[in-house]
Amino acid sequence: MTTNFAIEFLIWVLIAASVIGVIAARIRIPYTVALVIGGLVLGTVHLPIVATLFKNQPDWLTPNIVLVIFLPALLFEGSLKLQVRHLRENALPILLLATAGVLAATLVTGFAAHWLLGLPLLVALVFGAITAATDPISVLSIFKEMSVPNRLAIIVEGESLFNDGTAAALFTVLAAGVFSGSLSVITGLQTFLLEVCGGLAVGVGLGYIASKFTQRIDDPAIEITLTTVLAYGSYLAAQTLHLSGVIATVAAGLTFGTLGVQAGMSPRTRIALWSFWEYLSFIVNSLVFLLIGLQVRVGTLLHDWRPTLLAIATVVLGRVLSIYGLVPFSNLLRTKVPQAWQHVLVAGGIRGALALALALSLKRSFPYREQILAMTFGVVAFTIVIQGLAIKPLLRVLGIRTVSEDPYELARAQQIAVSSARSELDNLLKNRLVSGPTYNQLREELQQELERAEQRVVDLYGGGTTQILSEVRAAKMKLTAAKKSAIEQTVHDGLISQQSAEKMIEAADQELDRLANQDSSGTGALSKA
Image (cartoon, rainbow, N blue to C red):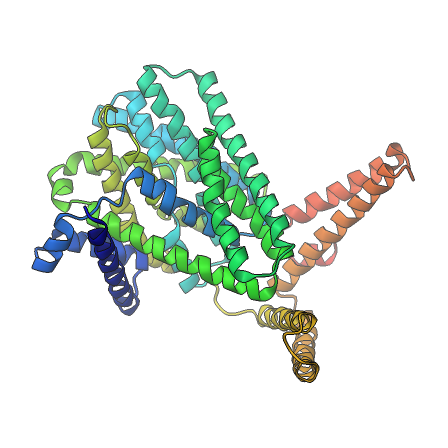
């Protein structure tokens, strides 16, 4: 394969992705689903130009390309946007599904594959780990289109980000057990914890360092370049240390998104940063999902339909049991995840790039490697196409969607947007990028716009909407946390004794716990707090 041919192939793939994207928008199906279907079609038709291009196509879905080039960009983009506050509010279901859920899905899928397909148990468990992680890209795009509640989207995206790391670490432990011929639970657990905790430390550390650099510069090009280095550097650094690169990249994105983006970036840089990572994510997703379709051989799947169908059944079974078995337990301790949402979590258990990368990374000497590859491709194609197309009808049947826009939420968004624009105008004047008269004119216009937005907020505030209640609850949590921090500081400064502060700190902790567990839909409870 020459360099010119690889570039030509890449250009044709992007052209195909653009055309498929237009068609997907017209017929209103998820873009990623359309890409896989388009790839399947292009891989099976016999048009001369298609045959010429794809007969000797470069092998883009190798472990190095998917794991080192594609995956860090997708992980970092997803984690960069997630707010730690939202993750903290839904921490229990997310972490439960991303840890115990991955383990349960691996065990159920592995034992079922061992029993139904006759694979050796450890080999079957490796297949279970490969297919344990979820890819929510097509699901989240449907959520945005149908205005699904934000909390459901956070749970789906948060689970996916964290279960990638646990599934990859579990896969490493199990694959090593296959080659050694045995698996020590204690040794395996130690290796698993080392990979996860070590990757977490690397990601948080590098994300913190990058955030500090960002707070000292204000140049969009440099700061965007820094985030690119952070995304790939955290992954490669962790991998070099034999830790989880997936966890490191996610942790780096979350840390930088909280400390670097929110606290250390100007509004214009944030806009440029979001645009860059959205575009890069679009390109990478377009390539990955179209290449998945191109790599799947429909004839092979049809010829080996029985093991493929059984493999799909084992993966679906693992997802069903992990969701319906673990979410009710989470509901006992935190704000409940409704039954209807649990159905969506099952259907939204789509497999994607990570599953393929892990399967492809198996050494050629790995037992049953070709069968595992075929089954993994079958599972990925089925979940993306069949489950991806089923999500939208399922949401309609279950009635899961936001019925109307919240006027208070829109007024608050307008207020925040104008305030941000005014801060940016002050920054432009400080850096001598606008003249004094221009500054005065624009500031007066923004001030009038801000006053109208603030009056609108005041007029709507007495309505008692869910958004208002949620805002009050979040503000009370921050105020209570500030009180607790002040008490702890007085103890540290020696102004009061630890004994005197204990009751006050305990009361603050109880209040924080009450607010964290409080359902924002409970209007009476919140108004009395």
